[in-house]
Length: 381
Image (cartoon, rainbow, N blue to C red; front, side, top):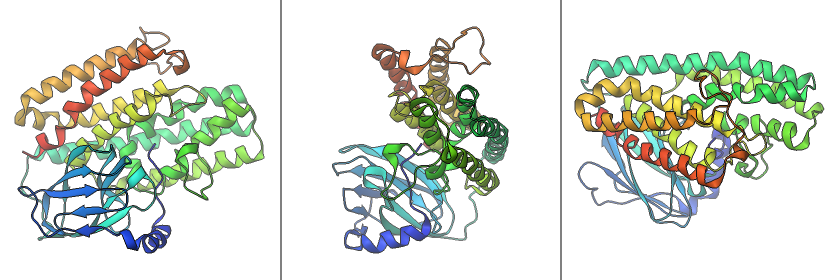
């Protein structure tokens, strides 16, 4: 789950309202070929407004008082690449691949709203530079994986929705977590469209002013906290299917590159660190460990597809990633209700996991996240 993004139409209005704090481009050159992005609470300064097509590196520094998100966006608000949860006073390097065209760099203080934006022109013919053909195979395989996950999600969601509409609390609760697995495995692709995630996966504390709360977590609250299913919940269940069918149809149009796969794998680990480990994601059902496992599986899939090239360019990195993925998978297995059954997604209720064990999980996630943050650079060497 990411913070809400406005629709394109609403974003135009928001841009007009925030024109006094619009992004400002600096004229001085960035270090090397990188674009320096300096984010603050009401500004977003970039060191260049034009770059050649190919690999682009953003050297990001958050000088504001809020966590921020920095994105490279198409004109229609689809995401080329992004980094969420850049804390105050911290830095991050984001590597992406871009074709010739017009884009925007957006800083989103507090990770809400339209953000403060800077135009970015990418020059050149738009032709891809020669690269290891294994990367093209990895992209094709990951695109199919993302589509398969979307296709497999719909029947699970329909099972969940049928139980909600039947007013069967027990059956709906049982179907809730499995219905989310495909989404959690490919969340960066789902989020890249901008307008779908706020409809289906937003939590109450992620709502924008005036936004109606819909989607999984609204129904989760009804099932576990309110313990009731009324006409509104049944209508919301139908809407969830409609919105996820929209996602299913659009997966094939997502912009996927080797670097977006690598960055997406890191984003999935960030999702675990900021939502699942803390218990905030599924705060009513306490099924966080199912989402946790889905995020890790999605990150591992992207890594495994990129590994042949990454291993050639940085064998020490892939050795460390293999080690940390194995360690995290092994640790997660201990939370299965039947640790011997590695195919099951029945995990202990997260409210039964104490703070010391949550810290153990957090440490394992962090141990994997650090080397995973270097995967994008490794596949484009």
